[in-house]
Image (cartoon, rainbow, N blue to C red; front, top):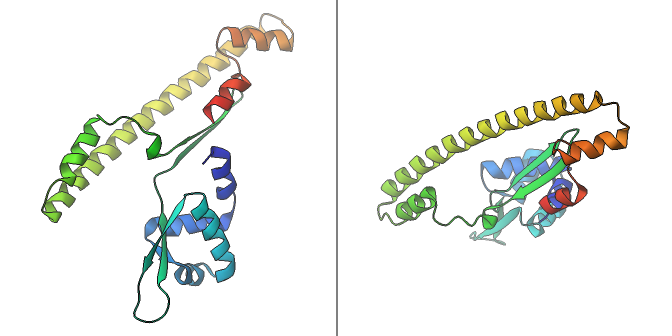
Length: 193
């Protein structure tokens, strides 16, 4: 899936609400219809397109009478980052399948925890890993935000310095690119998406 495809899916309020609800717990079509007040046929189309886009998976549950119930749940962790500023517009989509670091400490801890035979001890170990990873994510998100804030300040200061040189608009833009403070090239933006 590409970032623009995900944005198209998320551009629909009903689909965003479906994602919110099934992220809390798996839901079947009739539950979603009842909770959201949306007709089953309309929901079925949304669910099908989201399943085809690998956002949702379906698990069937057999019942005593009638057809099996299909429960929809989030397929995998998807992270979409959109940056919009005077200098750039970029979108980055990440999924676990794109991760290649098989030797990280957390991966080793996870493999070790999955090997624990007692389900309660395994759950306790997995909970501890999740807490540690969440703390690490918060730390890196905070550090990233601080670094981006400084970069924005540097770019603004660079634009101000270039304005004092009394150049034409295209000359200013070219100079900012040369010194690494201007808008990113179209090629760089395409490579990231």
